[in-house]
Length: 243
Image 1 (cartoon, one colour):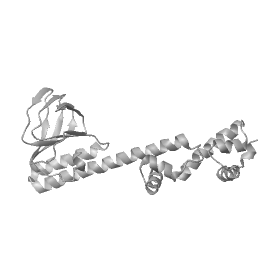
Image 2: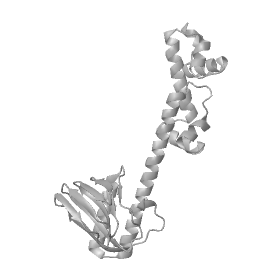
Image 3: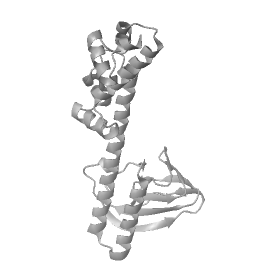
Image 4: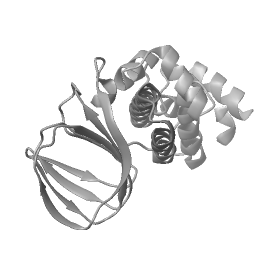
């Protein structure tokens, strides 16, 4: 992706705001590339058999010399045109915080219209791309955290479930997993796991269908005495008080 391309280089030709007339258009390859932020409307692109759907809040990149067909529903985009750009992959980039990107692209447009300082504009573009990279990293990281949560929810009754197992599912270190738990759940992974097991045990005890020993096993404990100790510490009552 262009926001992760370490050797990106380009020269700015112009930065402007475009109004897109609705309709179908065949565009012959141009000697400049385009990096755009769509503010409203939609565009459906076919670029060398790559199909992209540009929606409000999306960033689009179209390489130089690329022929394409596009259907616009209308709308507007802020567009930076590059020459001598060494990145040649057509892309549509969607992030969650598009409002922030709108502000940054508007800042880029205003800066260009006011000063036409190429170096300032290039610096702003690199900051925008870095922001996108950071957002994508966070988005991916949060997705992995949700995988960890789902894995725990599905396997907490397994007494052999260990924190390293959870880390492998989320492709993260124990330190990162703990930090994510404190951020999103305000507890450690072990506390979250124990909370699920205690809730399961309490539900089973109330039903009175199993013995304490059976409930400790079903809830994810190998040791009945340890289970009873943790249960009493959590609820201020021993499991036996439910019988």
